Amino acid sequence: MRAAVLRGPEPISMEDITLDEPRAGEVLVRVVACGVCHSDYHTVNRAKAGALPAPVILGHEVGGIVEAVGPGVMSVVEGDHVVCAFKPNCGACYFCVRGQPQICERSDYPDRLFNGSSPRLRDEGGNPVQQGIGVGGYAQYSLMPERGVVKVREDAPLDRICLVGCGVTTGVGAALRTAKVEAGSDVAVIGLGGVGLNVVQGARLAGARRIIGVDTVASKAELGAKFGMTDFVNAAEVDAVEEVRRLTNDRLDYAFEAIGLGRTSEQAFGMVRRGGTAVIVGVVGDSITIPGLAFLGEKRLIGSFFGSAKLQYDIPVYVDLYMDGKLNLDDLVSKKRPMPEINEAFADMMAGTVARSVMEPVG
Ligand code: PAD
Ligand code: ZN
Image 1: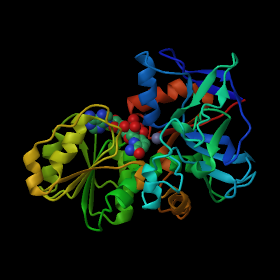
Image 2: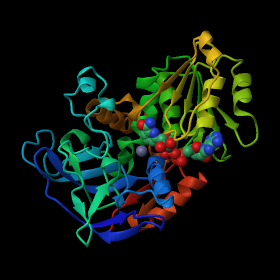
Image 3: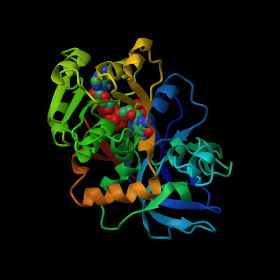
Image 4: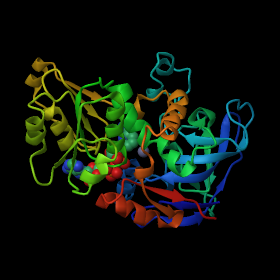
């Protein structure tokens, strides 16, 4: 198959890759569309720093069609439309059984096939190639564990609902499942990319009163409004913490960080009221420093991973909400591109000029 392979500091390029037949409990998915998420870019940054352990196919927001199933697979058959989940759950570990499948301890990357056999892809020289974040969606096919593949309705367009595989579930779930935003709450979202815009629409679904978006790109004012944002703060022009506190009269209930920076995480904590909750959704590579005395005001700082999703249940529900007009996925897809244009799609994301790009395989 043709796939976009990241090898090091140089740009990603297309290569011929071979992959195994699905073994027991595995599903081979033909990729129809794959969204471009910032999480992939953390790996690009590692590669730029010369710290990539092995060649990798990035991409983890896949909508596709089942091509083949391995022995014992019960939940999908060939031809089913599916969304791939970058964090599968085993259904049997301590965390799955206690109702937190989003932090399943058996599916930590890279062994997301649950059988220690990763990687199962090889390049033309016969060398192993990793599936980025367990999916490897910038390719014609992805080999997935059954517990990371969710059957979805066939009338839903795969070039939209692919985004439910990460950004939608992560953002909407952060508001609905992790924070459990109550109707009438005032909410701020720092970072209005593919994830942050979904926190905005999750808060809208929850019935939030005021939803304040914070970003450094002025065009996000118009875009955020399409998802339910009521106010926009341009962090390039004003102090975001002061402005949000002023707008809410110091009564902000929830702040979500959806960028992945220590500084903006500190801003999220700084803008919520006494007893309020700051939720860290972004993948923060540096440290977060906060004044300890703030905890005397019962402020809470919590993490959110994959929208605290019970993915086998949540993914079909989020697809239904889109099909019922209650979630906006159409305005999330700013651009569709053929897979060889992945470097250009990353550049768009870093410039903040797109909500999401969606890549389509060629071969
Ligand atoms: P994105 O690059 O599409 O969006 C980031 C947004 O932040 C852009 O609109 C930027 O303009 C804006 N921004 C950048 N710097 C600032 C700043 N200083 N102040 C205000 N706004 C700023 O990224 P994304 O939405 O795809 O991902 C966001 C983060 O979420 C990223 O760290 C990603 O790795 C993480 C993520 N986490 C999970 C999870 O389960 N926790 C899942 C998926 C993605
Ligand atoms: Zn992602």
